[in-house]
Image 1 (cartoon, rainbow, N blue to C red):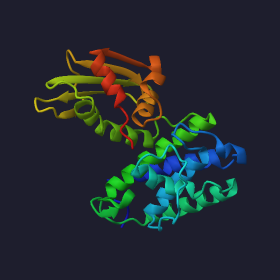
Image 2 (cartoon, helix red, strand yellow; image 1 turned 90 degrees about the vertical axis):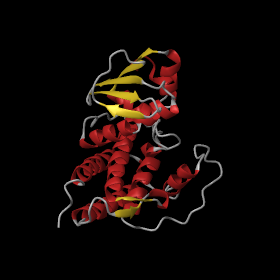
Image 3 (tube, rainbow, N blue to C red; image 1 turned 60 degrees about the vertical axis):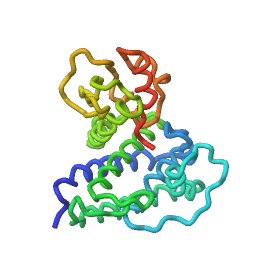
Length: 274
């Protein structure tokens, strides 16, 4: 049996981004692995360590037995502590050690994906031991690897792939979290609509409608007389939604109209990643 058609787009997106990451880091000198990335607290080495670590977990490898230092100030909750374990255990690895492990992990994952015959709704072990479907696990890997590819591109001054297969997976995943941002976190008024107009390599127009019960839904139809509207480019949108920049840092890249308190609350709660 071959990979289920539902899973193929996520496999393709993961493969595209992981190849890009390999291409970015293979020629790096030792010092360049220490460059700071937009991912809070993480260097180039740390981002690659995270990518390797989570793909090893997808392979079923045991997690490292390791004690985290107490001075990691960017680690503030249990989810971050979980993710940091795979990173900190590799913090003193050399450039050849990093590229070799990345290459070996990619070879193993490609073999796993080629031989994957399970159904999308098969329950697998996800991060932090949570049971999730295989489809969600592969979607999250495609999303995670693309976002970290962009972290590396920013750190290394090598922009690109803003409209790659992983970008489209990321768009859909971030949009799925937008109703919660607007309706629950920002507490938009009931029976209101909020419009997001995103331009650039990935373009879309979406409306979040908040019903009388305060629940938000995502719609493709534009709204007349929205309570608030936002216009921004794709790169700013995903960096904001992934917690890479603040609304203040984005500055004029975001054009917001409507109730100032509402627009501020939405932007303040825009990040949907842990």
